[in-house]
Image 1: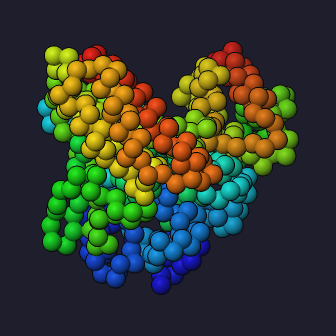
Image 2: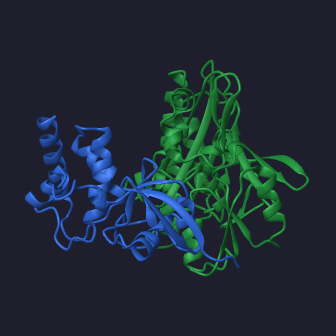
Length: 292
Length: 160
């Protein structure tokens, strides 16, 4: 690995100061499961001289789940803490879908949702799920703090709208309205330690047999995870049933702009978009009916 | 450019200090600096689990941890699994069930499986396979490893 300097920031201000003074050559690190590999492989997109360890900053380790205020996931909270949290399991069961399938047990002790979002892989398993939950990212910088919807964070493969002098603090999911259910499903040849061929994160709100709101997001079918507005439009206001679900699945298929690679052809991925959107919607509807 | 950093840790119950560069992984520190070569380097990018160690109570791939991050940490490696010359029941079960051939993956499998049995003394085959999914073996086809873990779990329960 090329030479790096290591700084262990204890506060947000300290981290921002180091990031601001490093001329764009510092990278925050939580679990390091992506960053250390990129530095070791001399990935040109990770041109860093300084690694800023942010795991000891209290604000980034908050995991607070309350049915009245929603869910706050600090940017450095490792996945195992998320999927072992009884309140997250109870109030945000779909979040467990993502937390428990990223990597394997060894990775889940270190990797975080914050890192998954900031790494901005097209296949990031946390990202469609956070978009489906109306997630808001809280980002601190030299000029204060700003809140950004998660779907506006990723701008390209491994590129984000978070500045080099900024730091993701937390991801905040609002309290779900009544009749809410969500789900994240991905397709991989292997259950663990694999990268999504396609991932689908969805949520619905159901009232009196109709969809009152919905969110549909896909991974691995575009340069970034995408929010599929046409799929949402196919659902909202419609009667809950196979007809609306199929129209949304068709819209997801149309919105996908996948590439062909070793994991699957573009055509296969478009097919998977339809299937996974349909399955994820059915799973979300089940959860909505169970009051979860 | 900084010089080497002084890192203070506890490894297998003993205080161990070492000097390392910030770019060195915990795996490199354990093997090349501390001299504990039981932990193996496989893929060096977090996929194979040959470098599994327990860090502050959680198993991790030590190739994806910087040595400097281990300041103040409690680390358990394969060298700490046996008690003196008495092998751990998992180590015996791996031998008796022929759960290794070349042996490079074995320290990682033993450390991972031990952490499973420490928290779940009677895991199902499904639970064992999921827990060990982050450890790769290119020799055995996994079946013998799963049977060895089941065997060790049974013997440990009978002994307790």
